[in-house]
Image 1 (cartoon, rainbow, N blue to C red):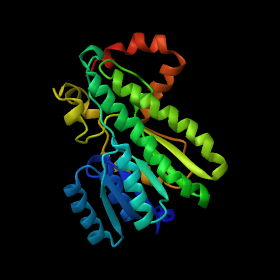
Image 2: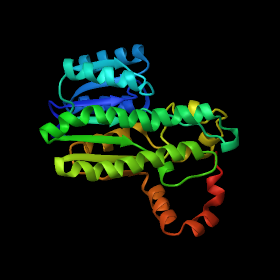
Image 3: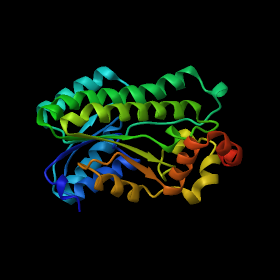
Image 4: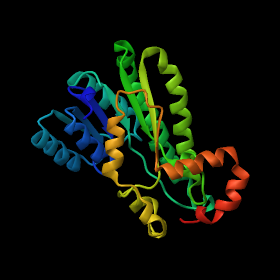
Length: 264
């Protein structure tokens, strides 16, 4: 049990389903108070009520599309007024589309970067001033192994996650003097509804289903790291070993792993 979380406030974007929902429930089990954010207000309200009833912690929910930067500012200002200090921010909102770059539209590119990168930066900027003032806090950015190993049909998604990793690594150094932790989470494929958008044909899920991560297990690992100086969480271990090898010997790795790259 993560006793560090008892009485703390954890804000989670993209909290209405998938890994965001699992993280919220796991935080509630540890005695944390929740601030849930997502576009689907009805699902948020249902989850929020369940958390209050089942775990006896406070749970606030706010409708937010992180792609709308004005809304990000407005909603987080409201949170500061109604809830107060956020101890942990989990930037989980994001999506991907698996397509060759020539088949990807510029609208898809824009939307992906606005949600995965700009929205993440905007929410982070909203909570940092209070964290810096209190000399305590934790930013957790859900990136991806795709940010470390770029594969065919994920050029735009990988590029957005590369950006998340670059931002996270720089932010970690900037926040170190303020005693604020910054962690990147780099999972491989997780069994969530992420793939209903990313993999419309279902080919990728069919090819990698036996290796897909359990979202409950991923959530437990993430929550256990909260308010600790964990630099990165890489799942699964064998895939992270591959990304390390890719960074050391990219040409050799592409030569021998190219068949696995075309699973989408």
